Length: 410
Image (cartoon, rainbow, N blue to C red):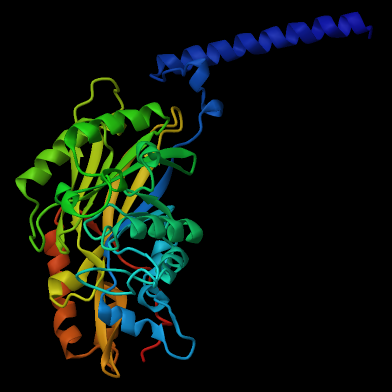
């Protein structure tokens, strides 16, 4: 067969194949199938994907924790034991966030101390990083406890440990540059801000980001212009030891979410306040994926030496954020939580603090042994009920079947 004849036959066969495919497509449309535009054909669409955020409450180191973390043999501090039972959960998330409510100002800055003028050993930064933390807010009323020098030294130690931070700054220029980080291909902007009463304390105005509605709304727009696709606000607000957010919190949350914030993570009350999904009208997009927002008014304490059951009880808040495969835009999918409890175990005249997933603590309690003292044994069942009652809108998350079963019962 000549090459010209071969080419002619091939062209004829190709034309017939195209014609047949067109007929099949016509038949499909008649049966109700809608053809996809060329730019979104199935073989060109990337499937939606997702990433997870875990956020926690106030991270505080009181005097009792300073004593418990001291190793007399090595003359050093270490607080990794506090996180060992929850670290496996934290490390599974793509972004782990907490509120660091203590300076890491160095021993030579008037020594280490707890309440009322906090200053924790700088090893805490490494301990948090090793436990799975990615980012901490440093916008709170205790970040100024070692004045401006303490603010700067804290940021130095966080940088050295590889922890991102938002809410306090060394310079005015740094304050104007909003943190943007990338998680699974999504650019996330993070703003940390604290209630303004801390202005009376001795640090420069630019050292802390204070809650100001107009400024926050402007910075939400700014961070979008700088390329952020998802905007997280970490707010230090509300009334201490109150189980419900006040009107100022709920009003500000509504304003900021309507102003473009995607997620608000709150702290300061030291007890749980509710978390809720907020549905915002948005006529620009028909999918509805971008209409859901979320606010957690207060996580409670992640770790502290406060003694009331409500201040020892908290959560690991887990948020799942979807990403639209066609547009690359993130959207809220779900919110759930793991209840946690801080054990204050008396050892040789001092208290050793350990954060337990409450489900695991209940298992240990039922198994007997000497893991928990009488106070813990009374608190733990109450703590479980307290968390469920405090967060009626959120999903209770359960641990994997074999989680922590190898933890020593000492």
